[in-house]
Image (cartoon, rainbow, N blue to C red; front, side):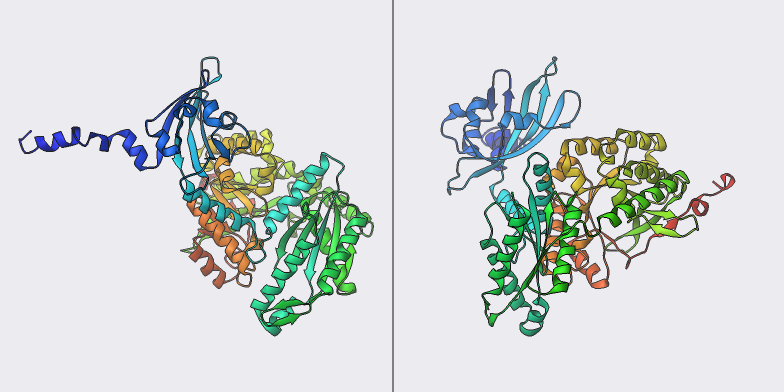
Length: 576
């Protein structure tokens, strides 16, 4: 080494050594590290911990119990239990964890939000023994995430929850009612003359009317009741611990509150009326879809009879007809399964930039005895209700694997039901059909619905893990209709999200849908998740979604489903 090099070496290893120390690097990054012996509860921190955590009493950092006393919010149970609850197993002895919580306040008087992540290991007896982690300051990021999370769950115009959160609240009502005798009511409130107001005064005045109606509805309800924006001119109201009589009285009170006083807008007073349809939950509906459907049926009857009217759902009007139709559909489906008349149609999913097809979704079709091909859409709800859906999912998987094997250029998505997402037999069938062939499984994307995933997150995590171990990717279908957070998506290990088409098909006219899709796209990109927008119907929507960063598009405008009949895609053995 030359003499001219030696002073530089002395500078690096001498006077500026601290600048390059691990402690200095952690401090510069707003991080600190620790080693936690669970048996003794002793924690050893990096030297910069007191400064990073803004803690004056160093003794509080020396034990897990002491550190626990500093946590002010963010955890529903102890930090130890939260860390050890992680099921992201790396192997038999190691598991990763990532949690967030707040300590006291920072120098500005705001909660000091931290991200705590690392891994814990077990001892020879298989008991949790050591936790090694890094704690990072995330105050600004947390506040931004909280704001984005609020906007993704609430309607921007009214401040009330959006359709996805409303769906989740009603789903919770079904769960809670199964554990108690409490009954709920779902009301759908429709603004009768919003179109006329928009035409006469403009959309800005229409927005003022919508916001004012939301405030009036909220003012007439109890704190335990919920108001949500269902669509541009409809609100959904969930009344807790109620009865048919209370539902009717509440609806009449809501009608009067809108009818009896004009709404003041920037262009003057506007007279408005609403119509209301209602259904009791769970007495008159078995699931969330039925609850919305029945409430909307009742609303339509209210509007047909007279504006400014409440109509409750009457289950006796068509109960016998519905039961007979369900029996007929079930019988037809079972016969089609026995006679192997289930077939697939492949719908293109295109890249938003190139508009070239990169994926195909497998859609169920049924070939009737006379040769007519019909959609499986009418059969799926009945199959789910009667427990036949597993048999359908088995057959769809067999057909999809057959298509993929004969078409090595295709990547396919396969839908599975909520029941199948916890079915080990379906996983065994997938394993048996693919026989460890990664060139096959790498071209398969398994779609689970959001509502199914949130019913049992632990079971869903296990299902996703096993599917991915076989080489498949996993997508979440109908995203936005439930209440999954993007952090849950990370926990589940989801690779792709498909935003529900109800948020896409009216994007051009509905600013709330635009905002919601944009927020989801931004969050998906931030979490490195690919996004598919369904029900894309025109060139303007394509451009809007492309500008938002949505990677994939699907809809009849981009490509209709094409039948994949075995006689068409299978080649003779001699040609393979």
